[in-house]
Length: 178
Image (cartoon, rainbow, N blue to C red; front, side, top):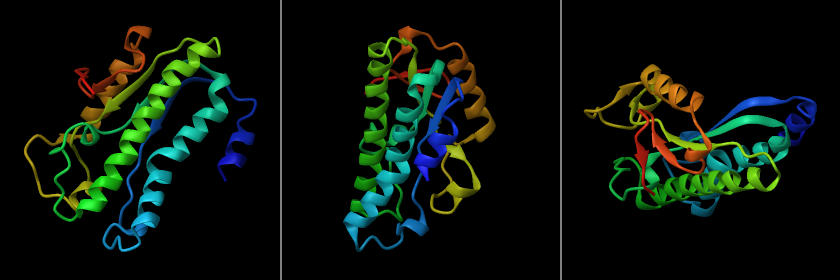
């Protein structure tokens, strides 16, 4: 299906591209990860490979900038404290986010090499208060509205420059070390 999408877009140019990492819920075996490799590989497909392949196919048609929407959970050991995730599930989730971030780093250099120096920026949306999150997390202080996160990312992304190429930022524009 990805190849069909890329073929349909073969004559389309993009000013900005936003690639969003996803998550793998119950439909991917989160509740029972007995087949650990199958679970991890599905997580990798959903969280990293699909977005990276899409950007690979359209990279010659992106004119301005690219954003990867990822997660801070891959950065800090205690960031992902979801009680319904076992140790393997946490590892699978974190490795997919790290791979997604590393894909962003690859493309931050790749665009320069193909002669299209555009900023590729990674964003962490924060702990967003959504119905999906409420399915498997406890209410925590510090959750923000999805609209606040999106507005913050949009403001920063609209003004992103090559100085920010390959760097990661929180939704509020705070740079994250990773």
